Image 1: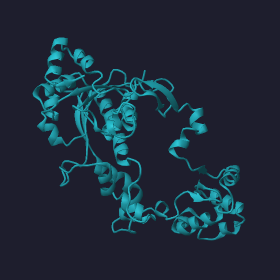
Image 2: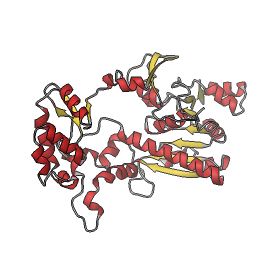
Image 3: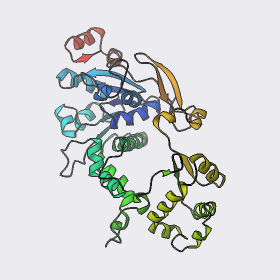
Image 4: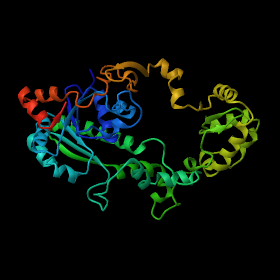
Length: 396
């Protein structure tokens, strides 16, 4: 059993940021109750699926959970949510706090029925700033935190987004970490609390940790930005027959590479002799590497660089990762049978634990698959559940 056994989480989140956070906690053994609106989480519809309502992003972000469908816009639905919250250690949501208040599920209302609850909201913007009421999505937060502008500065034709839901997943990790720390505080003191995890501030912190640069100082020492990350040549290098990622970072890496290329005299050039001077001339260095790597095939370079312990990596695709020998050796992928989707690939928890190894407790649930089970657990009778179903407050 995982380290969060006996912790119950009431998960009111949808799409990706919140579900990703709670899937991590579910894999750690928490009992995660996914409360979905009528019609279900929108992300169920994204991507291919055999049933039409179990898209791959939903599948991966909602394993280790049970699903209940409740119409929170009805008084009876609100009462069900509060009865579930009264049994929970954590409530997490990702709509704006004012919307939670309108539903009658603000912090004060929930803390009334469960004073020790960890009540975490993960949403767009901190509530004490002018953006407080704005909607937020991954692309918007990437834009607000300067990622597209940095992409353009690094050589793209114009601003563009990172092709990963980086804001949703990074903020989801912050939310999961906050919940774990709050649970530890409650273990020590008995105190629950409200926690807000705003996407904008979280991503601004992440991006500026790399790129605030000389703007850190007053007065500024430069215009900001980390030159190595912004080099227009910072990408996998073209070889004679493909592409290869090569990272030359330490003095030893550069000296060994210059010797391999037959240009060991460059190691004595003061522009390239130290880490600090190389960063100042990173564009010309990366351009030089690009020219040199055109002289051999990817396999030839991998062999030669590997012999000298110079970091390099072949370019992977999502499909090729399925055949990666390291992931195969570690058992990263597993084929498992899903009730509606048939055989599906599941990814193991990447960390290794000596005693309480986390692992998926169940595959992603069908919509409302556990509605009756959960309502009976909180003390409703079958007749009461039937009335809620007949009144379309709950679906199963």
